[in-house]
Amino acid sequence: MRNNTKIVVLVFAIFLNACETEKSETKKNSSAEDNLYFGYKPPGLTPEIFVPKNSTSQDWKFGNTDSLSMDEFYFTYTGNNPFENPVVVYRNEGSYYNVNKYTFSHNPSDSNILYSRWNYIERTDSGWSKIKSLGPMFEREDWGIMVMSVSSKGTFVFDDYKSNDVIRMSRIINGEREEPKLLGKHINTGKWTCHPFIAPDESYLIWGSEREDGYGKSDNYISFRQQDDSWGPAINMGDKINSELEENGAQLTPDGKYLLFSRHEEKVREDGTTYWESKQYWVDARIIETLRIHQ
Image (cartoon, rainbow, N blue to C red; front, side):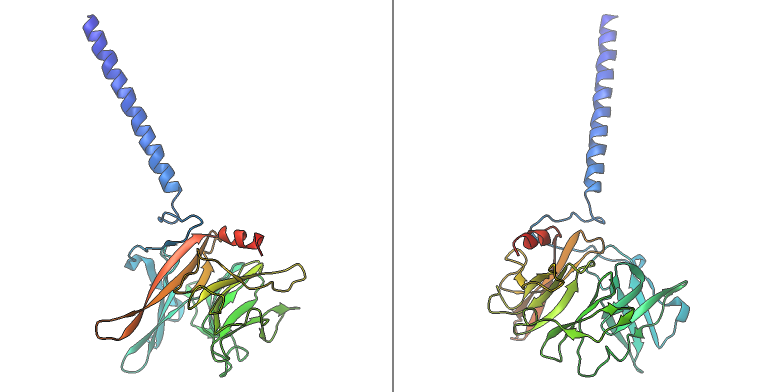
């Protein structure tokens, strides 16, 4: 009888131990999932290469079902890769379709309009509208816009490769859109200046530039808004962000948690021709505050 009791107690102890182990593993896995960012393990204050998961057909959908035309139609990306071009446009060029990948920016306070270069699209009840023009102020033939960034106040910041690679800004003043103006020389300095990103609250501006004080062909720089509303000095974002290679294209994830940027390297094929290899990086956006402290 005593032996049977010992066996029952032993089995019960093993059962309790198994339950506790299962609870511990469940809690551990749950904690690990909670720490993921849309299924990705996020970085700390040291940039890491972002390796995207393969997208599927479920990650894409028609973007303009309300005005679907075989002359122009496009797909919008709905997956979890923050580096993916959000809109792919197909245009009928007669004997073939020309494919354009548009990187759209959005006003953080209005997600119903997306901006790309001198264009924009609007959200409708059945999808997104066709691509529309921002108007002659941004269609000037002597301007070359590659990247358009938009703040919560509706301020546009864009580069201009046709005017010696500079950055311009256009604000809304008393309800009216002002003519785009050149930013100061401390920003528009260097071999070229492009790929701007303005913070949603306009507290800082990031861009890519090749300068003598840089680490390589192109570095990411940042300028913080001062108390008198002017832009502070251009600050190189340091050797964690920049290298001897070419860095540019910095931007925040929509929730402001992570800073994304690209690093490019020119390589040579066996036949002697060259090509650019690009890798995407991301880092905790708190790194920006470390630069603000030392401005």
